[in-house]
Length: 452
Ligand SMILES: [Zn+2]
Image (cartoon, rainbow, N blue to C red; front, side):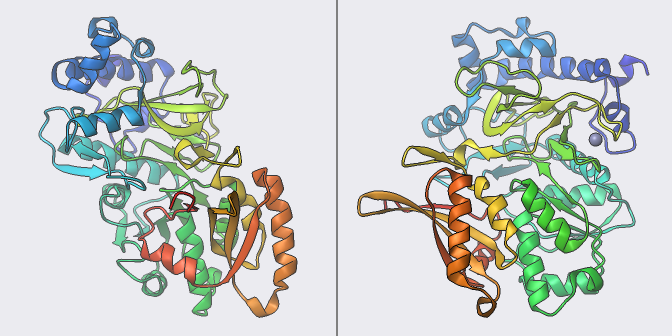
């Protein structure tokens, strides 16, 4: 293919997207070089947030000619974006002056949500990228896809729905458990023969718990062939549990409202998530020095939206730990891959001087068939000492020796977390209902009661 054929590259859906998904590194670079030049020139003239910062660092758009020049641009942190919003409410100075068609925001676990504008072009590209990820995960026009994500400021409900339509499949937009009760979702998935479920990983297990309690057999009564996840990390133990219960592959996807959604997706090889590198530039840096790390080394993800008109992000440190793999994938795609996000900087919490990540307890909790899907870590101060406690639900209390289970969990958690953990076992229902009522935007696996 001639390179000038890529001059009007519009981030298409499959099959056309395979020109670049399976293209040469030179072709991918060609698109990245051109997009970065356009983006930097636009931001210099129209996005005060960037121009102010770049002037301070002595960076001018004339110095940015190829994608390798991106490293001359200073990294932006979440805190700097927040400061801009505080100083220039309500939208900050990073949105740009394109006419937006919608405003989406971060789910805002603390403080006010961060707003991000999107243009019609942005929306069109992002929903195309969703069509790509669905195709990579085996969805075809024959499928009936149930979306159980909330339709709200949380972006992937809408973008996945439009991606499904663009791919030619049939969408069943169900919304979260708060919009359509899980019991009703179970019945409709069964009666209408949903073949694909799009939901958070924790909801896939809750859905399974509820369906079984209603007397259904997941393997016989449903036609689900694959589960597509976003919104929460999908650690190995969680994926195995979902796949075992549903007897179907579960796929991980990476996204965030800052990126506009849908930058990276697993293929059927499930060996890391391919980055849509025509639309995004991903790099990994040392969390302390900010220096770029070699491929394969884990560090903080820094991302750039090459395609985006409104609220573009350039070298933005999103707070996720990952690594990048540029080796060839068995699926044939040449897009680089990022490893599944093991931990988020935002989720890290210090307890008695030890850094604790909620994802570290996941493999322990998922091992026990006696436990339901939901669990939570509570940090509290008891007699002037910080304690950490796991709350988990027992499915059938009559059949379990609770003390024995608590002892076993306590021992394993100490190894996994690094400090002593208390264990509280609850009857099935409380945590699950709370998680479900919250609409599954992100069920908080960490509750810190220390300063309250
Ligand atoms: Zn692949």
